[in-house]
Length: 437
Image (tube, helix red, strand yellow):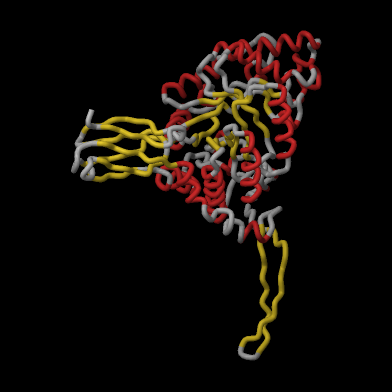
């Protein structure tokens, strides 16, 4: 089914050609919910200049000191910035075939350097029935990411949207509920102490917070305290949706201010990337990121789909795209990633599904159900592993120095056949590698 099918306006214009009037009909075929400007002019201003911002915020100077005339090769191995994806429970369960599991893991490692649990850590998934806690799925995902050096986000410790709160929790008295929340936070974080890079503390609080409604406004601070009891070094993020559209940005910022005032140890700000249509507002994305940056906390785009939740594909459960629509999708993904990568406050972006066999918006996937690549695979890989990737060779100058502007990340530096692996982080701003020692 074609999405580019809604004729929103027909403009008639009369021109004179060789003295005769001719009627031209301009038909603007639009994506549902989008304006002419969004379809035909949305990238002219907003994307211009991003390459300079990317170079400014995502590159440092990698300097190699050796002997004059030595041959030097600098090869990037991975990014410091998180280019990640959600991991399906399927890789730890029985509902994916062995071949799909194999493909899933191979394609994940080919494309991503970080991950988030899609469902495994959610309380409703771990303890659907009181006292019967499933650690096996979390263990399996953690073991796989650790073997492959993939940092993993724990999503989430709590989720207070009423429909996602298990019925047995709602049957508890206030005192019992408070104690059960404490047990959940402390036991989870203590069991996995130091293994998760970060957690979402209480998911989507501006859209509903059953626990606060029951136990009062201090419960979020208590949740954080309990989580720290289990793991004193834990990093706790907020996470919410409809922020990068601008629709709930003010509400989110007000909540962040209030939680910081209460002393909640917020390590970072999570913003989901679901709530657009087939396209997105470039200016609003940039404005939202600029606004959140005032808190001087790292920002992660935690759950990204393109097209999004408000698209006709999701609303009408359309599972296929035309070739034209696939190309449009690829361009939208590239633009979204460029805006986020160019922004100094953003430290990562994670897709909420990359394979149509395990993705709530199947057409937003990089890979089709049969694992054939969509055009977005090439667009994504060209961006992450070519345009934003450093591989340079050169000869040391008379002082024995080679200097390479390089994207922050892990590198193999080779001089006359001898190699060193080094890490250049954004925090350091650059790196000096001495081969004379």
